[in-house]
Length: 412
Ligand code: PMP
Image (cartoon, rainbow, N blue to C red; front, top):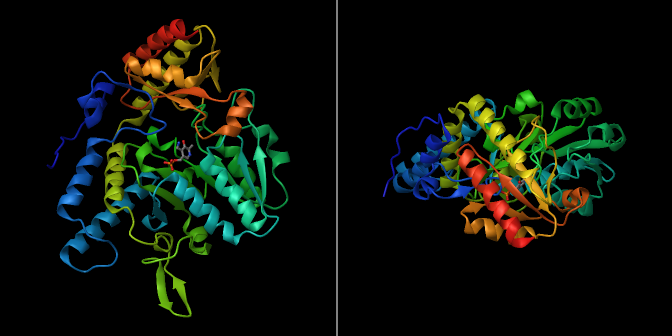
């Protein structure tokens, strides 16, 4: 079956809901777990189905008609990602299986250019995906890992930047937006400090991309990692963008077909980026679906969507704060934040809470959110997180608050 959707103008959350087949089929669902995975937009689903039914073939290898069509679709997907990231060169886009794979690639390939004693700076607010690969690099190459703390308000503490930057700083690798608190990292001072120290800056953009296109050149960073499934695209695909000059200096991470220039039994030489970093058959249809999702996103009225997301976040915080025993973790202000709000409920385990909310068709996430050092800094083992996307509306927020009030009566 080929699903053909009309172009949808997303003027309101209900228009947006109609652009998401799962939500259109489940009108009663209050889906507030977008930071874990967003729903798949019709544009991406259509592109996936169209690709698999009209030009499924391997890429960058074949010369028959289907192979050429698949090559063109894969090339176009790379171009769509490049447009979404502010019009960078398509050669700077490496397809991976997701943000985790992108960050591991970076830690391996850039890591191979670092020497013992070189420093990488991360923060307490990182997802494990932007911590553990650096721990592993520390084991392999003896790098020094420095860590920026967070403030009591849950933001990366920039006042501690001077002490955190050692004499051999080579890379600052930070989250663009916290998956727990929604805090958006203030990049200008970080990028300026990195440039002054001759260090590179890598951003984990997994949580930022869902909230609009990102101009990586304007941010002044060198690398940007994200996953398709968190920006209305398919899962199994992700991106590492890197500045061409830096990518060219990096050796490959995985070896295999497609990433070589010449192979003899004595050794091999590497293809130029991005192919150097795409060993084996890539996630082709997923990349095509991601390209369609990002093209769809690029056309949306982001100023209006962001304003709506901010209004809903305020409504959510205002609804949560008066509830007995509820403590919001991270910033409560409206400045520089994504619509992600985590909270602790005294005496109630997040998993019990999630179950009671689920009985009322409210989907949120409970747990440590793969950010254990941040949990420890915030003084909790686990918490409950509500994360909004462009298809959420007042009814979703109000349903969460009402269900939570009910859960508190039941569980406390
Ligand atoms: N970084 C952040 C900030 C995230 O929220 C996530 C996903 N929860 C990841 C990285 C990892 O993404 P993935 O599991 O898609 O590789």
